[in-house]
Image (cartoon, rainbow, N blue to C red):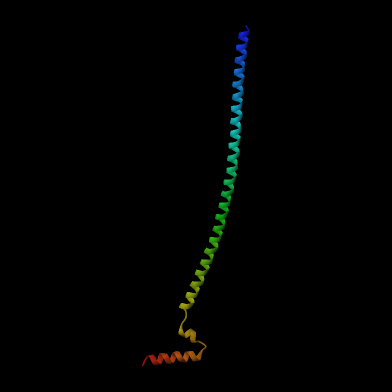
Length: 114
């Protein structure tokens, strides 16, 4: 009977050790899971901040490019106006109100026909 009690006690000790080992495994698993979740959350936050910074920089570049586009369009308008004015220039318009130049061009015109 004593032998059976000792065997039973040994069996209970083995089961108790098995349960303790399982509890340690569960605790380790939970700790590793929490560590993973914490690390993942930190990486997600960092990536999210970098993503927002990138979007912000893209918005700034778009604004700068819009300003450059507006400046180029303004420059093109000014060049077109300057070209229109250059195409509208005539000797008659240049000599209006300037009798000396009108006379010189008239003399050139008469001399060129000889």
